[in-house]
Length: 174
Length: 125
Image (cartoon, rainbow over all chains, first blue to last red; front, side, top):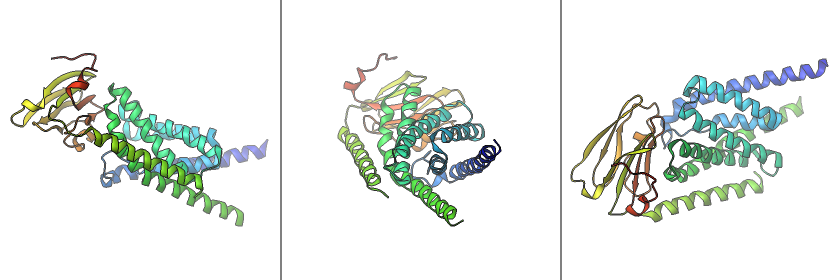
């Protein structure tokens, strides 16, 4: 099947470029994190790419994309299976699950998906941290994380929507 | 943006407000206990009411030493060998329920009230 192979190759290439973009964004975020009001907080720009992939290629391929990103970011920055890695993993998987569900229901725009993604990323992170530290006391971190997640989730979702809208109009005018 | 997006936005604002409300409700207490855990075991348990002057405390951990200070109002992590220093940036914790955690080194500072303390399964003195 030459035509489907060609399609697969094109998708693979596009997702490779987006993956490189997601990792570059993560690197930029790491250097910009001192600007955030809370230490360790991120804008979640890499999540913006996850939303784009989710809408362009669907949940299954987006999950593979996310897995690749998590492993690469782990190898490059946090180290595999360190507490920081596990906390990020919990947040990423929990938020992906909800975003995949949300995008397939098709009542939300990418902005709503970004908001939900940020919220469940925070909840997932705190859940993993609570398991690692054997304490429920870490719940007191949640309100400030949720509050910060509203503008950052809105921003990443809005960027994803902008990108997808432009891409769509480009394809239509081609 | 669609209608459902606004609903999500409003719901998240309400959840954040509720969380802040619950945190504020706990208020301050004069009978505070500082609990310091390492590797999920309590290593120090200090009634802050009886603390006269600012006190230093060092906890040996995997990558070095975590330095903690406390006085009669609360406690804070002065320095830590962990990479992200979230525990140090957390600053002084003063209210019951507040925590400063260093997840990589598995150290937790928490302020509790005597009534809540009974929930612990083990207290090491």
